[in-house]
Length: 173
Image (cartoon, rainbow, N blue to C red; front, side):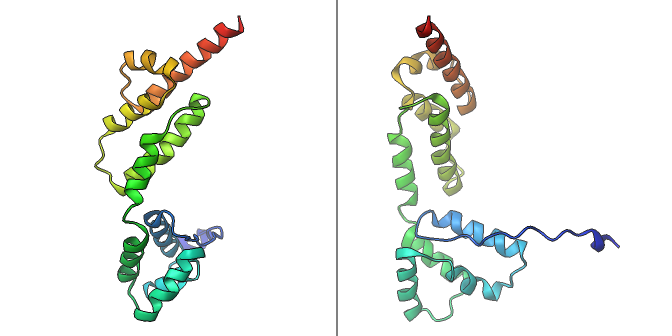
């Protein structure tokens, strides 16, 4: 009787892969396979249909020497080919990031890099991110926010936004 209330999930497009963020793509593939109950023996074939650009050329060459790879062999090859510098590239982007617009825009971009890094290495210390967030703030905000010793990115962003709004109000006067 309970099965009659099962709702068919909405149709989701399979994730495409062009060589960027291989770990994220693999996670999304597995989520898709589980949601639609795709049998594991079909995973590599299904996923390979959604490899685009230079990654598709890599896969074409890979297939010449790997006729029937398992999912684990296939994903290991993808990580080896497209993932070795993923962490370093993302960390570099985070370390170079500086606020150029408003605080909310900076926070959104900062968090995108932060979450990408945490997905690759969950052991990263939150203090690293708070420190780096403060370093990337505009000069006129950094010292005032730093004095408040924020314990999270959210708290630092809220403080920076308040100071930013106060400065805007005072300039308007």
